[in-house]
Image (cartoon, rainbow, N blue to C red; front, side, top):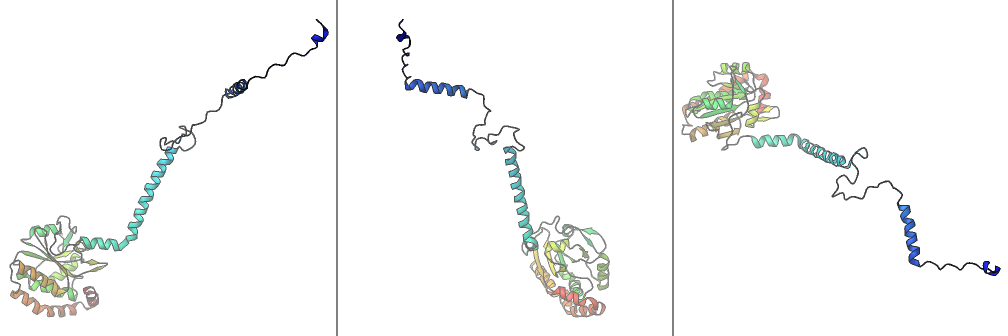
Length: 291
C-alpha cells in the first residue's frame, strides 16, 4: 500500500443525533440514582395522620402524646378558671344562695333533714320533722337571740300567757335559740314557760329558716303545718311574732281575741321590767340584736 494512503487520517465519525445524547445523559443519571439513599419520610397530612408522619418511637415525645398533654392541660385550665370564678363570687354568692333557699310564707319545705339535729332544754335529741310529726296540726318556732335578756323574756312571756288560745287549733309552740340546755332550762324554769325550749348551738336550724345574719340571731317566727307548708315565716320584735301566730290561729278557725292573748299583751311590760332588773348586763346586746 502506498505510504501516502497509510498516513491519511481516518474519516470523522458522524455526530450522534440529539436523541442519542439525551438518552446517554439519562442512562448516566440513572446509574447515579441507583446508589442507595437514606429513606426519608414522606410528607403527611396532619388531618389524616395524627402522628405527623413521625415513625413510632422516634424522638422523645410523639405527636400523639403532645396532643394528649394539650387536652389534659386545657381541661386543668378550665377547672382552675371555674374555681377562680366561684371563689370570686365569695360570701355574697353564698348568702344569696342561702337566702334563696330559705322558706317563705305560702311555700313549703322538705321536713326530713331540714335544719339538722337540735336538742331540747332537757338534753333530748330531736329534729323539726319529729316535732311536726308529734304535733296535732303543726309547729310554731319563735327564735330569740339570748335567753334571759329583756327582749327575749318579753317575747317568751307573751307566748306563755297566750299559750292556751295559740295552741287551741293543734299547734305546738317551741322557743329556739343558740343557748345551751342549761341556760334555756334556767330561763324556762324562772319564767314558768309551758312549752319546751330548743337548743341550736350551731344555728343549723336557725340558718335554714333564714334567721341568722353573720354572728347575730334574728328574732322571728316560723309556723309550719303537718304537710310542710309554711303558714308564716316572719322576722320581728316580741309583739309582732305573737301577732303573726294570732293571725294564723284565726285563719285556722281559732279565736285570736281570746282572753289569754289579751292577758299576754297586758303583762308584757311587767315581764320586760322584771327581766331588766335581773339581767341588766346583757340589755345592750339584746337590744342591738333586736334592731
